Length: 176
Ligand code: GDP
Ligand code: MG
Image 1: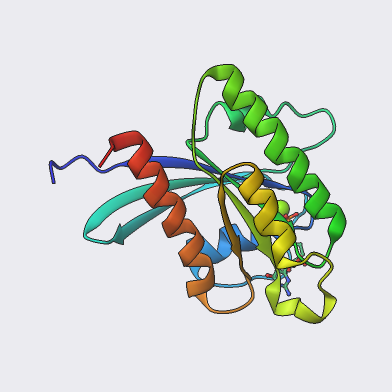
Image 2: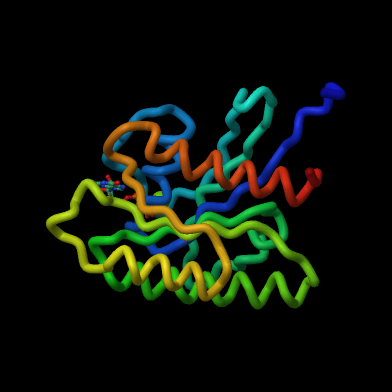
């Protein structure tokens, strides 16, 4: 350790209703809160002490509107967490579009950075519209990490995703 605490910027992106805000709040506070202003966009900070290392994670819970410019998070983020709901196929199709536009953007910038595809709301298994294999093959197509998770149950489900993204980002930015 050399006293420098690595700081990472992660952007939560995806369709309205996928659960970006719920996952953000769960990660930051360990609590599941049901209702948010769907138009709210915000950035939150969490100090992590994990695997013998301190990290600071800045998490942008994005909310894209028709006329909003995605470069605010495209430029800012060190990694992207693309969220869809397993109970809503349309959010999965949106996730595919985000995967595509983010990878095109990164290529254009000559940048590579970690992307995670996250299928949320697995506590609602009975309403599932998107198979796990569809999520994992989309992730394979873009060579990115894939998780299914839920903001409504144990914190571990959500922590696992963020820790993996921290690990990948740390590796990218600092090597080893
Ligand atoms: P966002 O538009 O992507 O930020 O979506 P929200 O986080 O606002 O979530 C949309 C709705 O889905 C809200 O009513 C949430 O309470 C609900 N929700 C989000 N994540 C989960 C989840 O993992 N399980 C369940 N059952 N509901 C969820
Ligand atoms: Mg939201």
